[in-house]
Length: 315
Ligand code: GA4
Image (tube, rainbow, N blue to C red; front, side, top):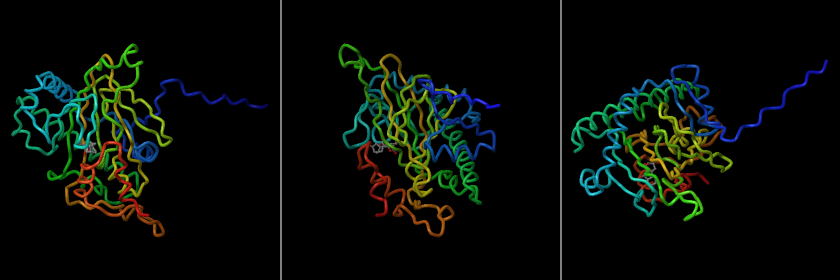
């Protein structure tokens, strides 16, 4: 008797292909590697970061962003501090305001209320721990013997890791009558220069990632999870096996979006080159070696949408 197989289900509109990884399960390591290869992006659940800590930090961030602009600029000045509309130094703008700081800052010295300072310090410590755990699952999944090969690049207290709080206010410009309901860019398309970045947002969507076929997909918000991005330096360390994911944020007409991102980066003197244990005998390194400080300088002199790895690609 012939068995009729069911036709494959069509993906529904709004279907999200984003891999969801349970990091409390050691068996997830292969799934993380696959997600880093296919998307450069995945969502993490069962992460162990306190939801109470996350909500205290979010509340404190909301309080900060609700201050007068003059107060915000006075409390935290450029370059590691408050910024509004302008992103970087080379003319990029977005519908966003933010606080940007080194993640290893002595938060005790920052002129914010104690509860905000403590939350910043505890959150960055806790997210760093989770990040190292994920990087160790990745090295395991890649079959690298030394589990800390990647995590040791970001675990020291002298690393150049960054922390960013972004606030995307509701955007009145998005209006059927005035701009035809077109998108307004909150944060323009870019890849992150570091090793891996870890994002948590409130319940307002807006984040989109670019698939390898150049189409954009919206990432449904999930305040109880973390979203991991492969960054440029991890693409190099894996000799192009992992993809540094291009992403952007669109502004919302009605709701404000608050996100917190931990950018796990190495120390300034760290050399970045494909890991020798990942290169087969015949395979060649695709990139010229650089130090993180060289890459960071060139990133600081670039525009958001530039392809920053291009100049380090071998002919
Ligand atoms: C993108 C990732 C991080 O947010 C960031 C950004 C940095 C900045 O805001 O100053 C950059 C951007 C980011 C890459 C290109 C340059 C530098 C803005 C910009 C136009 C803090 C980072 O490390 O690189």
